Length: 90
Image 1: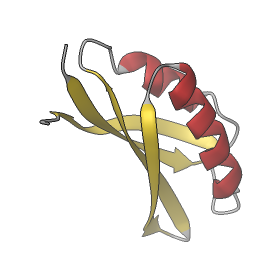
Image 2: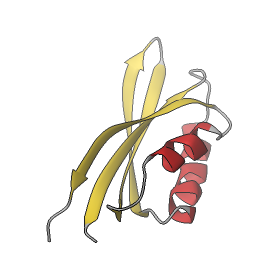
Image 3: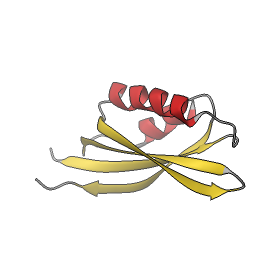
Image 4: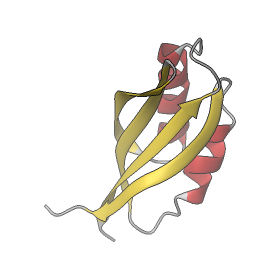
């Protein structure tokens, strides 16, 4: 099978959510589900809230739902949604 690049955007519960802790836990979750080389990016949303997007590679035969569901269970995460899924070439 081929490789796909997946990006999931996580919204914190509040502006006080520690995004460094969320990022560390998200990395563990992604790697436990066979995601590889996670990269994280923070983006201001509104009212002091900053979203955290995780981009990583997976085997394209894997479903995205388990990643979203598991990331939603991280303390301080309000929601997790796939924002990009594309086949990687190379």
